[in-house]
Length: 148
Image (cartoon, rainbow, N blue to C red):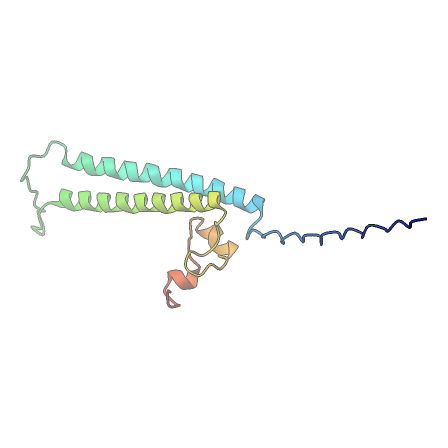
């Protein structure tokens, strides 16, 4: 009688370990609140930029090229031009803030919101609550550390 040989037992493949889930720097509740803040601030800055631009444009309506106004007291000409330049500068500042907010919204979508763009370290919640569009930790924004 022939003896049947047992087939060698199949070895089980070692169980694959799941890579630890990459922990996001902030929870969904905080990120949702920040998104709301960013959108509100964006709206304010857009309205401000448009309003200041309109004021600047209104200052030159009806003036002929070369018209100059002189201040009665100081003789320092063209107060309207100075006011217009101020309004345009403030409008440009507001527009720059809108661009920073848009970048923060992009970081939210990409999952990198709250991570310093210089160091890769987490930006403290307190800073993000104060300036929701902050892209850098304070020490990098103020130049306290060398930028690499």
